[in-house]
Length: 227
Image (cartoon, rainbow, N blue to C red; front, side):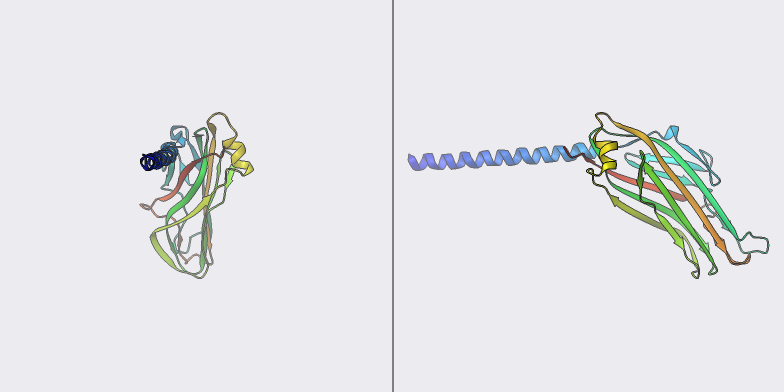
């Protein structure tokens, strides 16, 4: 009987440990699912896009998919073909402002900026695509694409991205997202610019071409704030 009691006690102990482990797994799973189900709300219907290279809902459009965002720009770029009357330099820009709401108790853990673009340039030219983005006043590191002097490029299916991972204990994120007792609200600001120059009018520098859109995307992943 003692051996039986001992065996039953061991079995009971195992059952309790298994139950605790199961509950822990369930809690972790529920937490992950809750984080995955939360998303940032972009009020794209209230978005403002303006600049020398964009007109809202004419040649510039904002698309959203959960916490991910994409700006499609059909007219942002520079077009300096090689001919005797071509200017030697050009610049085009677009300023984008989008109202944003972040869920209470969450912050942006991971953010990827991506630019899809095309370029045709001869060797004696140089240019760049630059981004400047802020989330509710928090600056995100810029993504800059340089087309250096001395290289020739002809490719209309290029892309480049930058990944950033953020710590909620930093002052900016804690103050703007994690200290609030309500959903975080503010403006996402995106400033895009394309610029370039060439040595003489007969060189080609085209960072834009009809039928090839320049696209700027932001992929976001949320995480719970530290308690």
